[in-house]
Length: 505
Image 1 (cartoon, rainbow, N blue to C red):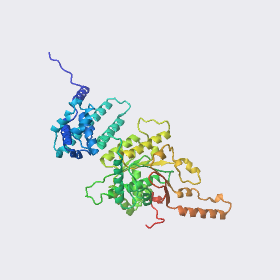
Image 2 (cartoon, rainbow, N blue to C red):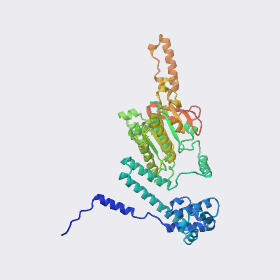
Image 3 (cartoon, rainbow, N blue to C red):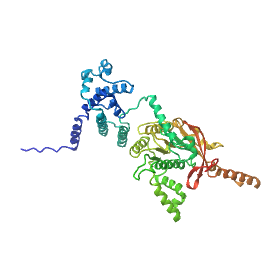
Image 4 (cartoon, helix red, strand yellow):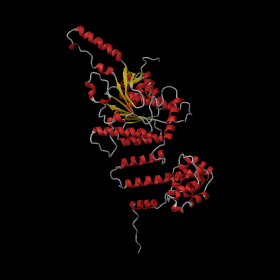
């Protein structure tokens, strides 16, 4: 009598598939490892061909990795590395006991390859290491999906996986740790050389504002900059101006390049308050000199509309990316910045504004002040990790309104916590015209027409002085001077520009 077997279930098939994966041997090429070590021991000059991408941690065989590290230390210390000089180091450590003792060093010499092929063997070793790391990441993804980490929901598992892949793609096994001072000096000298070769006062990425660039030298990698102000001061307009100018500067770098050349970086704007369409309209209004109010109402003449369309085509080429996800978490922002840095390159991050952000999922703060502190610390860490400047907009507390002089101070930072401490620079945008408009004299407040007219004349004089003017108060700058930068502000187009007061155009 024939028996009918039940077909395998999807679950059992999945388990069989996973079992087959777990039974495979991890990618490794021990022969290549031995051949490379033999070449290094025979001719130390072969080390120059692999030292920039290979470390002992990349070797599948731990003993081979220890030998490579020992060779590296001696060569980089200006000493000879061969079986004789390494013998004393390994005799007392017992590292080579599992492979036959110091005689293993002599065995490596018989496996050697020529110095010309050393780089190829090094890449084979490194490629096998990358594959092993991918297997580890894949196993973590599968295990977490099966519930090994119940504290992580689906979206956070995706974020964790992307983070692991980004780290593998960028660091390539170069773990953080101490850096020798001579290496730090060399990096500092290289930055100074780049600044020396550039013309003008801008060392970093330009802000598009001449006087601000003179004070700061531009936007520098790894810096966290806080741009704060009361509502209606123009924080978003100023941040948008800086982001647009930076994106345009990135495009200028490839102006003389072949037509198919792509920009080497991009600008990311996280707009938590305004939609991407509203932000794009602001940029269009500024660049086309068309009132944003007219754009919203559709009250445009033919010439204005043609100019509007032409400018929009030009702006479409800019490497500018807008994410308008409301209440975005720090972890989600970090993941998206990493992805953009990997795919398009990343030169600047703008966050509008940090009080609307939420900390990473899973982190809990006792109060709002500590929560904001966690966010600013995370933004500073993001700036350092991706080596890009991060500009975060911030609201100010209401205590500004209670003072006679409305110019902000560091103590006015709303829910400040560690905002002032974590920031490399703190800037306040202030427009006296905004407050003067609210102080227009009222005829009923005066007992005579003469007093009223005198007050009106004085008020009008102050309004004329403040008309179309703004102040950017650089209250803190870790790497440079502080002071006030006077700017031109055109409210109709929400446009900031340089204000020529004491210098020629």
